[in-house]
Amino acid sequence: MQEAIAIPLPAGITASSLLAMGGELKSSICIVQGSVARLSRPAGDLEQADELRGYRQQIDRLFSNPGFCPAAIAIDMHPDYLSCQYGRQLAAERGIELVPVQHHHAHIAACMAEHGLPAESKVLGIALDGLGYGADGGIWGAEFLLAGYADCERLGSFASIPMPGGAQAARQPWRNTLAHLYACGWDDMAERFGDTEIMRFLSGKPLPTLFAMLARNLNSPPASSAGRLFDAAAASVGIHRDQIEFEGQAAIMLEKLATSVWPQEADSYPFELLPDDDIIRIGWQPLWQALLADLQRGEPAAHIAARFHRTLIDAVTCLTLKLCHDRGLATVAISGGVFQNRLLREGVTHTLAAAGLTVLVPERIPAHDGGLAFGQACVAAARLG
Image (cartoon, rainbow, N blue to C red; front, side, top):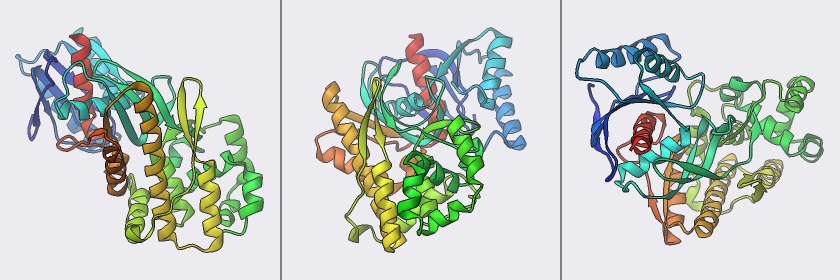
């Protein structure tokens, strides 16, 4: 592969030959031969015809080499990813073992392996991103995992909030604000904060139709997405409320706004920890009540953005410290595209390190989905022994 990054596999993990197919956005592939992995540079969105064509040609060139005969193909668990569909096709045509790897597990495994943690290691993995197919068939996006290379256990998550309109919610940030406020009890929020700009804006939408969708789970899949929470907060203060032009645009602008007043703004909003079966979820209703109260008082948008970021730092570190204490863990690995946010990444790592934990952060391997293939390869190699 051209422009590939060579990374040694962790001690105790080897594979004769593997191919990992990566994800859908910022797609990359990874091959393993012996104790070395080679990760291609991230490309683009595979839903774009030219990107998909180049991606498949790169893989086809690998298979045209007589010396390339992978023992297994690792894929994401998402049934609709084009990379997964091609991986399943190749595995079926060539009689190669297929190894599905959960999206967020791959993120954490990549970070662990980059830092050379040996095969038997266990960490508390924090993966924050937009969307990833969950082990339960749902949509995940903010996950706290007890992670090794071969397996992982979900210990915590952000509260799941519906995405009205499905994929449209990833392109229109206001939909996520509406969903969060609906989950808080729309009638109460409208009565208390109906004079705010965001509530007036949302009231101009076709609310009966949207509320019917949300109530009946019609084209409104629940998602524990960190990315959609950022979109919701951005829209609430007027950032790219109607439409974004590229992935993460609203969140990037929200971080920029927060950065402008970061040293002067130390306040944060409340949140809650909610037991939910075998996991603990971070609930955001207290945040939204306090954030809308700030909007109602006319607080500057930059200060609201900073308080939102500090709240996420507080919430993530609070749950992390609890889970590490409960499970006797001393090492934390963080990854996922949302951790490209400098304020969030540095706030979380500094707070956890001050509490005595070792915190691993992606350095050479991308935190976003461009690093998924490497993580998939490490998980597959560990499972195959």
